[in-house]
Image 1 (tube, rainbow, N blue to C red):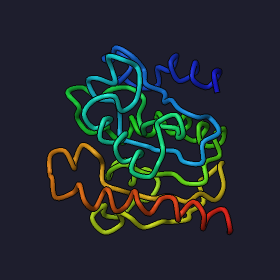
Image 2: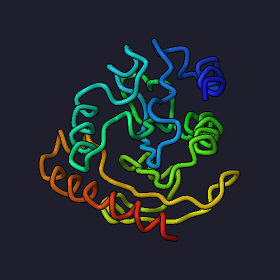
Image 3: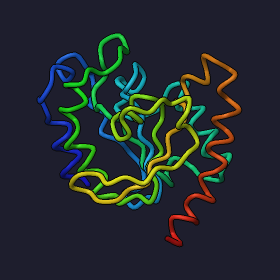
Image 4: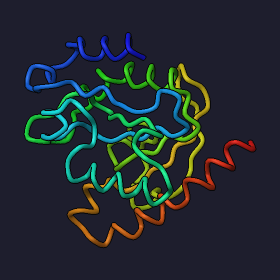
Length: 187
C-alpha cells in the first residue's frame, strides 16, 4: 500500500494537484472489509492530508460508532485525491485522472463492501442512479480490472449536516451494514 500511496502523492495527471496543500490518498486498515469512498478532500482534509477530518468526518465517526466500528477498522478514501478549488464538484476529467488510483486501492484492499458517500462517489461506480432512490440499497457490479464488488450508496455525511432530515436515513442505512457484510460473507 505504501508504494501506491507514494504514487498517488506524486501524481500530476490533472490540475487539482497544483492548487492543493496536500494530496489525500486515504487511510485506514489496508485489510478492511469495508471501504468508504467520498467525493474529494475539503479544506480540513487538504490542510491535514487525511480524509474526513472536518465536521463531516466527525459525523462519519459517529456513524461508524453506531455500528461498533472505528475509523481504524475501515479504509477511507475519495474519488479524487486532491481538493477541488473552493470545494466545487470534481470535474469528469479529474475523476477520470484518479480512476486508476482508486481501482488500485480496491485491488489491494479487496473490500467486501464499498460504501459510497453521496452522489459523486455513487456515480463513479453506479452511473445513472439517483442517490435519493439508491441510498441504502446494495448493488453488485463488475468493476473493470477488479472483478465483482458490492456497492452500498448512502447520503454524504456533509449533506446530513446541512439538511437535518437526512440524518435519520443515513443512520438507518449505516445500521444495515453489519447484516449486509454477513450476507456477502455467505455468498
